[in-house]
Image: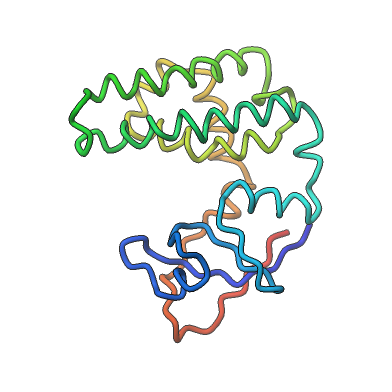
Length: 187
């Protein structure tokens, strides 16, 4: 797979009007295609990318992958935001929010007891879809996470150390409207 994009790195605290011009939600990521179609949901962007050539990530265990992604998007992310920003949500303790997140993490920990990835021995869409959220959770208290979820810790570390992850985690300067286009090739 080879995808070429113009990358515009933005800061959420300093969102340019051009972001709102293509997506009124003002969230990231947003993908504007050559035909002017807009994809402004992360999972939809992932599905678009898969269609460009890496479809094997979504060939097996589709119902299982969908269920895990749905739980992540509809349950885990809700509690993760409260856990990460517990100071903004004083109606419950940080431990309460962590325990709500743990309802999902316990299942994922068990899945990794006998498998390298969430639905087997091969990396799938669900692994890449859940990775950023598990990483965010772990980074709140990495020592606690590592002790409680050793299988998830090993899974997470393998992602963080992977060539794939490191190839896309370059730091870029914040985009300004007058900047020359920054063209990136993903192979």
